[in-house]
Image (cartoon, rainbow, N blue to C red; front, side, top):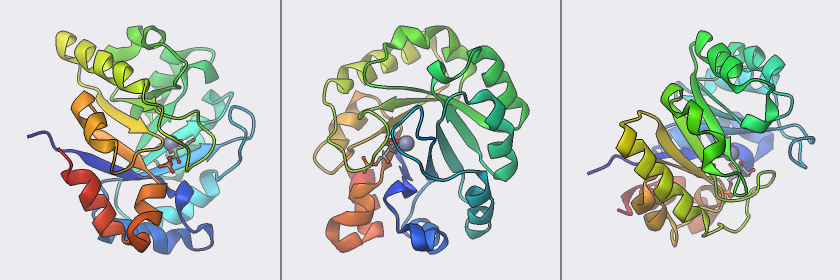
Length: 220
Ligand code: DX5
Ligand code: ZN
């Protein structure tokens, strides 16, 4: 039975008490914390940066699954690693040299992920698959929480999982955007190992985080 991990996105948290919200996620059974970093350039929204991550680092030992939606990204990677990230995921179109950025992230003792938007084909990351720990498949166009899941992405997840099995690659498949109780089982069955969720975890069932994480985890 595959172990499904949940990486709640703090984009949907109460930003006036992010530390406490992270403690609630940990108590509720989160496996890691998904930190959406947005620069208002690669995506039309602005969120948090290294100084905030540095302070949040004291609130939990859970891995910080940092999703960098910033461009150009290469020169900022070290700042996020020093602030306390454990996984750094970048979008291939935000760096001049994907291989160099992967190497840099690994040199900073972080796991490395590549994220592909709904309109970005798998072939864009094909050559990097042997070298990475994570593929973050976007099931919404990045920038905002609370968007609707794009069902066409399910085929992309299935194809990626097929490539992973056929080549015996080690990367995990993480899916991000619009994940809820209605679609999480099909996302898991398509091959996802990690589910990112913000709105469903923080808002459903009167914000009962533990219940929402358990519901997402147990759907297999
Ligand atoms: C969107 C972010 C997602 C998003 C997920 O740009 O990358 O992580 O916050 O939030 P929900 O679950 O609300 O779609
Ligand atoms: Zn994200």
